[in-house]
Image (cartoon, rainbow, N blue to C red; front, top):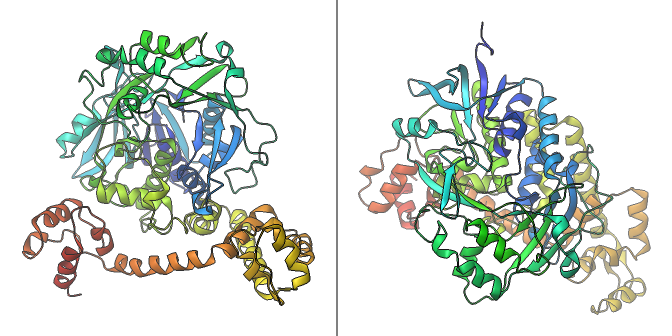
Length: 625
């Protein structure tokens, strides 16, 4: 008698952010799914900072939510603070972020997964894959149990041969207090995969009761907080917890330097590459030697716990050096440690070995998502998990794969960057990586992606109708501004208050509203505008969307036209296993890169580093274009 179904449609290995989204997506699409993890108590654990979102990452969480994933909902239900970052810049840069209750976040994720039909759970370590004729047929656990599966999603995080470093001590582990996963890397190498090593780090956790917050700068949440999810399941926060900010000093830096010879990063014990954009404190002191101080963000880990996360003090220095240096930080004079910071090295597999669906090129039905692909961050991992879960389910159901283009979502940018360019350091998403960021705003993720999520069976009909209603109301409101005129008598007092040029004759409101320094609050002073808002019961989402469409219509239209031009090359498909070696007039480097990446289209080929516009012209000629 078997512990499991005869054969699962999808087996997901690992229950971090990628694994949780993958399991939820596959199960919600009707696939019989099994989630296997080493510890069921640690589902969706926030291994590093207790926060979701941030610059570009907030856009990804909104996109996951619009497609029908769970990260946005859980971010809302477990939030203790909400902030919209970059509000002083244009809307393409606005990025939502929540401070989370770490324990509640993991609990809410687990309870959501347990309510998901078609989803089974099992606690064990997966030590190998079952493969027949280059096709995955299941997994094998450390207990010797074999589970048959039509597809497998690997989301191993930092657990593959994980090695934790604290000063001159090191020990195997996937994160603090948990063992590493072994067996999978070695087997994948036998199948012909390339692997590498990366590292990441985390700061000390300290006792908030031992800190003097009166010496720090308070960092409260937004006065009118929004939320992540577009669903009506969640509500904005009515009560929030503050974070605080303090700084390191030259004295702190000198104390830390004393331990550099015992740091695994400086004495050569760690040779792998760490995240450039989230460096350790010793890395910051070394790289930015001209700076005499660095910001530290003091973040509470929840509503009721006293545990505090010291954001900006990631380190693998010996614990006594960490403690001595941190006690010299203003407000930390009497600090007590819950645990020291540490660095962790782990295996990853260069993502150029994947297709856009995140299926591996070497083994059919095997998908990789999250840090196994060389990314860093919960949000990047969750979005890959969602896409891998969707595509594993679609493959089993013998349906067309689901991918997102670079002009459709940050998720599309992320995956295209990974499989086209690869990464030799932990990849983190930034707004600057997206060439169409005016189109990919956080405010319109539902308009961009909810119809796709509905078609997949992940976003509900209720959510689709809500989005369509918002879009229709916004379009009508924009039209109202185009059609409605305002007299100089009504307009000039408002314009004068904003030091904006007067009008001498009646003019359309759209023209006035489009002025850079005129806001929705200004035009609401016109009686007809306020009456329209009240009569049509417009909510803040519709009003914000309308303002963006009026003020940025020129930029949005220009970017859409550019995207449409380039997208024509996406439809020029390159035959699978195309023989590039026969194109002698192409550069040697281009031929090697194209042969390795095997791009699906001319557009993807043009984004490969080392492939020039001339190489693309030669390729087009060779293909009869």
